[in-house]
Length: 389
Ligand code: ARG
Picture 1 (cartoon, protein in one colour):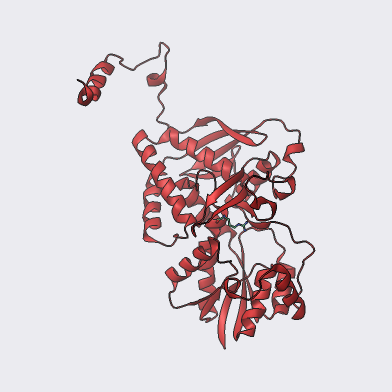
Picture 2: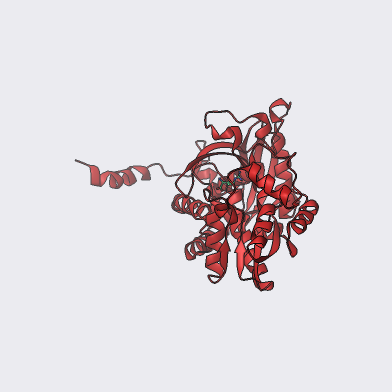
């Protein structure tokens, strides 16, 4: 019997997919990747077995997600179309790469996912699989099967004794991990409808909260955050703390129309408190320690990097080359940034670094001034020379 490793979330689609693939002659191994989506795996594992999985493999990928995906994206300053901090997009190559590893360990000849044919995630999964092992067969049941509605899928589940939890189904499609939450569908499909309070997952209730301004101090070393308020703290905890704190303030909400890779414009809302605060602080520290030309050049790199992540091109020579470039820019991104949190927004209010290129004696308008203003005239005359006359 052919063996497939199916990326399994525990939800309706992938539960039904287990049974559906089995009915088409596959032995199905359900693979669950923990990237911090806060789901209880216990019931999901049972569901997978009842649906017909021969085995369930659970991988805790949270640490790897931070060090190998989130931190590189932070150093790159990767933000898609000016807002999306890429939580979902960054998780896909990791989940797919580990899936390939599971397939090898289990001697499977196929991998499968539960993505639809309209989104970006199918692309990210499949490009990763093909880049890492082009011999694996790729199965995408949701793209092919006969069900035309959720009701038909539920009927199929009932008929085949697959236990599903329909009562708790949210009217939205939600994807969560430690770097953020993505929410779409339901009433959000009308781009002119304001996201209702209940569509927010982490920041819900911020509107009603009476909050004082609060300043957080973030320590960076070599481009990555290592401490909060002078206290060393490990990466997962640091992100979790900033998510909790930022979420109370409603920080990191984004409501956008984005351009999908498959040509569709879609409306999605995101919540990414930690990502928003950290990207902001990191960029600010860079402005203190990187020279003008490097800083400006890197802005173009950030855009390209975000596109590569969004387009599913993580395992490519260009992404690796950009990482090598970015790494050389981060050596001096060490220092402390103070960020003020207010309802719905965060602002950098102070920054310092042992590598600061800011020289008070050059910038000041006081008597401490060491800048020779007379030099300016010659500089301007040569600068203007091509345009004179
Ligand atoms: N639009 C985002 C992306 O392509 C998120 C996709 C998943 N969103 C969701 N609500 N299930 O990266």
